[in-house]
Amino acid sequence: MARAHTTTLLREDDGSIVCRTVLPGGLRVITQQVPGVRSAAFGVWVTAGSRDETPAQHGSAHFLEHLLFKGTTKRSALQISSMVDAVGGDLNAFTGKELTCYHAKALDRDLPMIIDVVCDVVTDALLRNADIEDERGVILEEIAMYEDDPSDLVHDDFASLMYGDSPLGRPILGTTDSIQRLGRTHVKNFYRKHYQPSSMVVAAAGNVDHADVVKRVRAAFAPFLDAGAEPKPLRSASTRPAVKSGITVNSRPTEQANLVLGVPGLPRGDERRYAMAVMTTALGGGMSSRIFQEVREKRGLAYSVYAFSQGFTDSGMLGLYAGCLPSKVPLVLEIFQEQLADVVRHGLTADEVQRGKGQVSGSMVLGQEDTGARMHRIAKSELQGEPLLSIDQLLSQVDDVTSAQVHEVAAELFTAAPSLAVIGPFDDTAAFALSH
Image 1 (cartoon, rainbow, N blue to C red):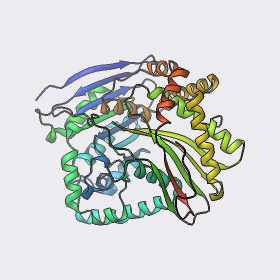
Image 2 (cartoon, rainbow, N blue to C red):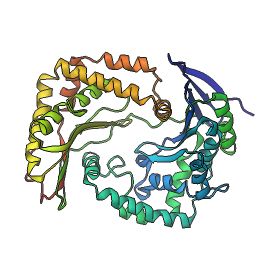
Image 3 (cartoon, helix red, strand yellow):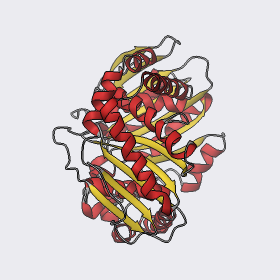
């Protein structure tokens, strides 16, 4: 049996230890042993998402997420779910643009079972024609539900405007047309190509023993571990995708309009991401943020208003969102643009930067109180090829952000040609104007 290579990546001040083992075939197993907890979170991460689909496969990554829970040679769909339910655990999955994750959480004593179930689901899915037809209907209902919520849909419209008909611009769920066209061959080819040990990371956090997790994962993946393979990176960041600007209006007879105004952001691994996080939080990350104060508190123009950012391997987006009465959209849009222009000219105040840093730091630490969040953090660090920093190191990165750095990022990002997506009872784009 080929030997595995194990290293200790991190020792935290709270006594937690992060270890990493690379099994034959390039399968990476990373765990964080957390003292004083009685839960364990486990996940199998695949370095493929909707961005990896061909046009003919659009929707396959998310379709697979559904199908893998429909049964294996060892278990029926009911057995898969009932085993986890019987111990009060949680079993779920999610699909992103660049990755997919199958995960479970339970009491520490039930970790062997959830490792067995999740690994079984990922490695031995039946992908039967009958299951595909059943889930096709479920996914079409999911798309219909999503399209009935304009506060979510406007973000897809914004991505489509910015990235066009490219994998980053297409909705993760697929479309009604693409899901109706998908056949078993499309889905199975995606599964065979991307669900390989060298393209996977297995992660566990909580009251776990690294050697025991490695032993169980190795046994579960044994038929698929080819000693000649090496771990594959998530993807190359050498070429940034083309980004467009402009206005798109999705005309609907809604009582409320939803809008996103945004620009290209920073790639996920950009060293300036901490400055961007502070800036985004100060702009629209809480009740004291600029756009919350200007749009909601001072003028009562919207209930929901916030800023957001999302990073990909080689690109990113940053935007401001609001849901308001259709008649208020021009004024909200004017305020958004005024605030962005002001940040470009003058930067943020020292108080705003300090509050932004405090919010980013607080949410970072509080989020890590959960073993599921810890499992996510160590897995994403491995997937993205980034050094795993301790919490103290992360806090130091945020603390080191200066007002000048925030101003520089704002001046670079907010001077780009903006994009605007609107959903509401509007006939065309004539009612909206973008300054640049």
